Amino acid sequence: MRHLLDDNDRQFLERMHRLGTVGVQDLCDDLGVTATAVRQKLRRLQGTGLISRELIRAGRGRPHYHYRVTELTPRELGSNYADLAMIMWREIQRVDDPEIRRGLLQGIEDALVIRYGRVVTSEDVEIRMAELGSVLAENGFDVDVDTSGPLPILRENNCPYHELASTDSTICEIERNVFQRVIGRDMTLGDCCLDGQSCCEFHVGGQSED
Image 1 (cartoon, rainbow, N blue to C red):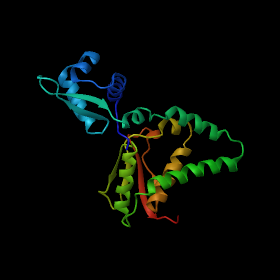
Image 2: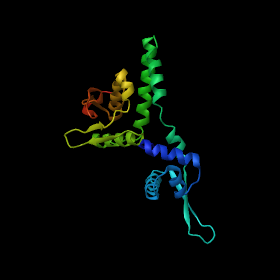
Image 3: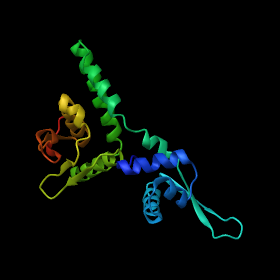
Image 4: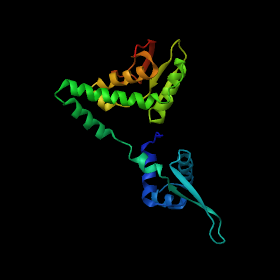
């Protein structure tokens, strides 16, 4: 599961990764912040599983905790593939043979359908949308599912492929196709971040033929 980390979280984890096992005061000295701020950050990141702590009992002094990053942290810090994704996408678009290019794009779509479709198992469309929303959130997407209307809407509060989509909207069509195949219903893209909207909205339509 990926976590939504801001720049401060990443910098904090990177410092801990370099320092190794540390105490609260070590982090205060290194970062130049208060013990209260450090403890709040440690407590929150512990909840994500990215930091572990160990109670140290030494001599006659008061027991204290030592902290270190877990085995999940290096993978989390190294999960920014934006530059590589952009390079690979541009190379795919440069393939001269349209059949080969279509085959590569279809392979990307099929792989995403398999990845997300594994956990979408309900027969009910609202539950299927909720299941899709959950697996997307686990993969770092900022999404929610609106069930207030007659049919549910999947809302991406931030475009996950904004840089790619701003140069080639094909990725938007692939994403719509993926969601449509996973849900088993026709879907349309309503509001879109590329059009200056605050989110991307995927609306469920009728029964899909796929």
